[in-house]
Length: 155
Image (cartoon, rainbow, N blue to C red; front, side, top):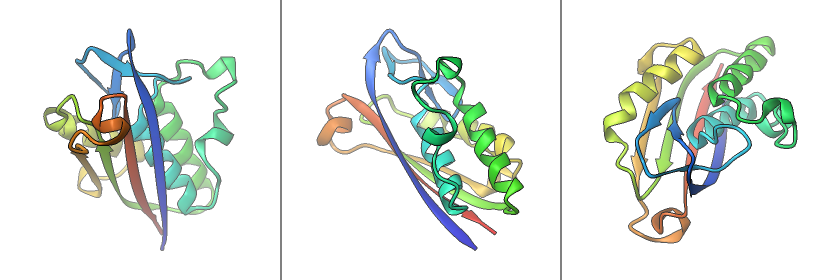
């Protein structure tokens, strides 16, 4: 068994779509990034790669590559899953926590879990997604950005 941890954070900006867990969430701001800036999937992809000691998504998808500008983060997650499977690992389960003061994410969590389970090729029972606030503290609490932590267990 191997465990990996991933973390990502992006700044919120007007004029961008907010996409988390592959779900477009109605909100007046979205996350700024080279891709669609889905912090949840970025953290999870890094956790999966880290568990297999295969680096991180920055090596697979550099943020200065014009060919990947605006890329769907589900493509990034799929590439991470293929890499660990090619290295001989199976994903057992994953757990992700999104940290955002706003918007409330509870109505979207089940769809996020379904998307992730589909992308990982596992049962939805192997995917946990949670959301929390930071009680108005720090950059996430002030509404400047959103972050996510993820762990993944491989065998």
